[in-house]
Length: 437
Image (cartoon, rainbow, N blue to C red; front, side, top):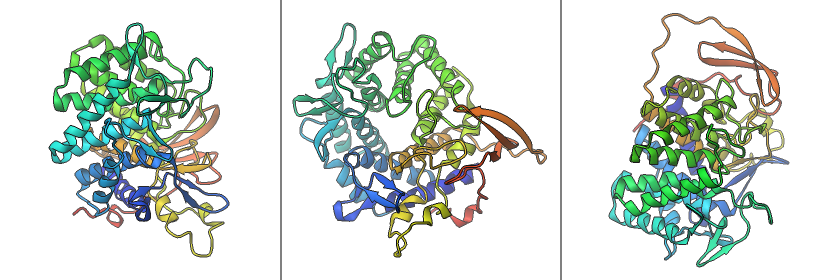
């Protein structure tokens, strides 16, 4: 499994480099549409969310397998240029600070500081955390962000999942995604004010808004509404404060999430949702590793099974014939290089192309998931004998599939997918991809 994951990182690194636009100062391309022919598109998510994810991903890949790329430095400069005097990171089209995007900036800055221990980066991190603390508003017992979008003293209506006059127009987890990065900052800097901020935000998230019920159940999108990332932050807070009750709450939450996943690691984008984005798999693996390491639960077998099946399977490892049908005469330019190594945003259990595009966020999400596996889980010992294949029926997202299992790996799934079928590709020898420096 380790070799497979290392191969995936090599491909992911190449895809990240291909997604950087040197004509725009190494601004990432967010979206790839496939019809009528593959085409890359810029978006507001490029500036902070994507740049932050890719800064973090390139550092993680370098730490895990030793491969470095020259594009990392100009990407770092592009990302850091998004920080304004108030400490927040602002998109440029339009000029706004998105609360979800701040989480990617926090994670990137934490990774950058742990990587090189540059005082300037820690100061940038402090400014961001305290800038966010300064714009949050008090609730009955906690605090929250009154909107998704902010611009230098003014809250702006809009943002992902915004609906005017809807009680839930501001999803509490949307800003809660920041808690992981803030807790990592607390570990690095010992900032007790930031720790209190997390305590009060969780009080609102869990006890006022009751996004996650006491039994661990919830509704909504796992990653894009920030529910799982917020609970990762809750787990980190509980560890830092020795809060056993909160840790057990996190464990009930993970068990509920697991009950909505497939046995092979297909994690729904949202409860009852028919597709899986790789970011959600990475978030699940992160929380499962933390709870297992703390002895609250034992999810190591689950992590290994999810990693060697759906996490790896969610990566586009070849240019499938279905992607080549409508290519222009020039072969699609660099778009195919962006596709190979990317991770699916709308995967069905049997097909990676269950939606309209390939979003670049999942490329970072896939790298994060692999990072947590390789940083926590030893490579399992091979079985002393070749396991016999077995076929198991399993219903996933309302559809019954026949799964061919060989040991803990899925070797085939029926009915097969139509556009980019999963669990059909023969993995090539690792030496074709992996050559650590």
